[in-house]
Length: 114
Length: 115
Image (cartoon, rainbow over all chains, first blue to last red; front, side, top):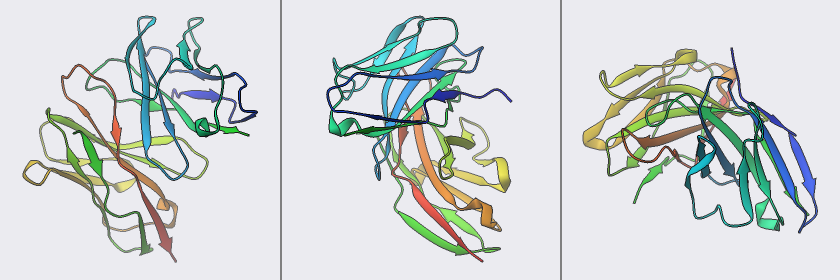
């Protein structure tokens, strides 16, 4: 069964450093998402992406964050200058269509900012 | 405001006992509803979803959920719990036919299963 994959599974970085989290969505999906889950808190929506542009973003997704689909398979989340409060599990998801379609989630990348 | 409430943070049941996990939502548009499960170190796996039609939906691993519009609830049930069901369960809501694709999640319910 096709699945969403994410790399790395765990990333440790120093505050102020740039990080790139990578995701490979399911191959025939068209809509891509990033969510995050701070330890002990709920899963929160960050951004959705379709047709090579952001379709929606949350208030969390400020200028420090960016997303890109650099080729036909990868979908990346970049944090330019990490803060301690960026430490969280970051989930990538994809869906074939918008609206009612099911979003399939990857296993997550745990980001630890020291 | 749009929100999902899972009132039970932690539940412990005995293996073989029945299970009900509660989920209440507040959503202005017609909702579509999901239950996801997260095992330790794993991602979010879809258990079941409700879009329309029959308000009792069946999912994987023997789970079911019932949509009750009058109570704004979408509770998850299983008649007989297995030790492998120990995990964290998340209820989520999205907009049916709305302009947004984002899912709003509850805080999760951590299920422990006693032998």
